[in-house]
Image (cartoon, rainbow, N blue to C red; front, side, top):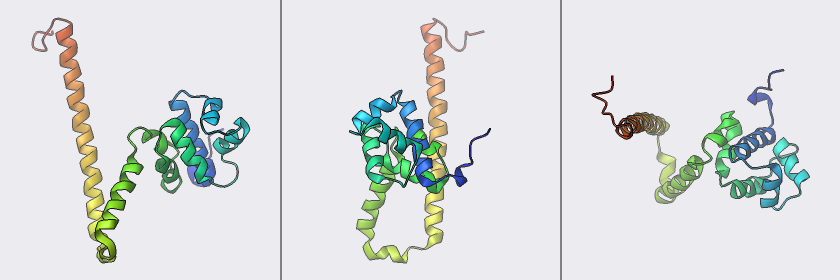
Length: 162
């Protein structure tokens, strides 16, 4: 039987599934995370199962226990994504975003009310496009560097490789 589509799951369930994905990605057991969160195992299992309502205290304790981004866990449900938290656990995308946004809010103050939505859409779209392009280029450069290094270590140069 296929899993339920994300849009039919509660926020607590989506966060629980995301927490499980992060925990497994960290190669941690439920018992290890429960202990690090100072929770009984059964309470942690309820959190990961997504029973009840979203408990932000548990989300933040989970983030500390697994060194992941709590805001990515909380952003998953509005994005309709269980995977978002796992995908951004290490780079702390949402934490960085909220810190930068907080600095922007402080700088702008009431001028925030005057921002044109079209300018915001353009700015965010361009920023995300640039991030995607820079990531692609970096991955290509990394692959090229590794290939050249493999050849050097094997005593070959790419030109003599046949």
